[in-house]
Length: 266
Image (cartoon, rainbow, N blue to C red):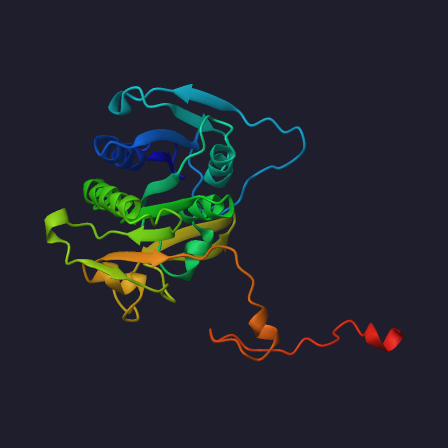
């Protein structure tokens, strides 16, 4: 299967090399298209979309990946993914793998993750994908996450489920010590939180990790308990039911009848 590997940490990041190497060893046709530098926290942003804009790009060969083509683009991973899915770099990929991200992407804050944003962009382009993350350094385990990614991609290929979009988070332990795999919902809390404060120089960002206090059945809880968390994402989708009084997802419902008052003007 032709697989595009991307990430938000840069085209030569250790996590990308680990997962690309695992996919190559499994026999997949791998191409790498990733940002030329770190682009974390950009979500599904494309960057500039101005008419005639020129995105700088360089082509590389990385010793760990042999002859695998590696393209570094000066843009967020979502735009790189869209470009590959549009056929700008040869045959369209059949699947996209984004990662391995250093730092678990769990909970509703995956909205801000550009690791996840890349596979959501692929979904909009009609291509399935898998975003994969492990924990923060120095305890991160790229080896375990790469083994999980390779097996999940193989399972999706065999099951003909490559149109799915998955967010996968892997505990930082040996592969043989994983307790299993859980299909999860998104937690209200991610596995880290940001503290934002103003000082004389501007806005200061501090990051604190969480290891407990998660609702059972969620992605954060699964990883904290030693399980691989797999969450299926729907991508961009409208929810008209919130205007009809029949929403089943807990959102408040508001009848939208004639909010603009146009009927009274006719």
